[in-house]
Length: 178
Image 1 (cartoon, rainbow, N blue to C red):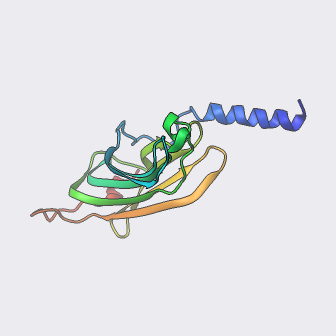
Image 2: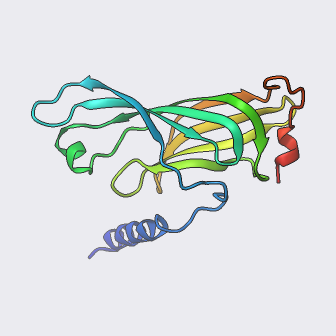
Image 3: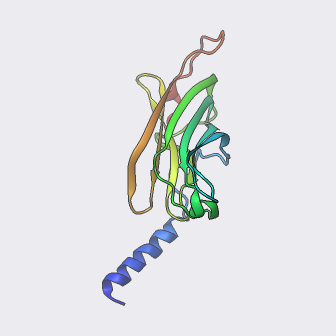
């Protein structure tokens, strides 16, 4: 084996090992399954599943009263059918206040709200949360990354913290930053 090939193999083995280590700053990830809202076929495939866009909903595990919806492409065909297709990084995101906002615990800027695998091995999609303290707005970012090289594709959504119902009390997200 050439030195270059050995180095490439060692890098691949290291990457594989790192893929199974817990990530820092993920204390707020709740073990939640996203709710499938609906799917829409985009490319017809003969005898195998179609390519689709799937819309999912999740609740922020730390911020009560915020829900996010994201749309992600799902590959069909033979690879999609057996679960080995690498999904593309085109993911859109919309987060909204759906009730009175309250914070269950403190959080860090960029804490992971939700994460899921987007390929058989290395790629994952993450939704992370931050706080724009000046404007009292929660900021959500969705992106996908690979262990070795990331993706510049992303989407951002903001949730201004507003009074809900008759309550005039509005928590400040800055009060809950670590």
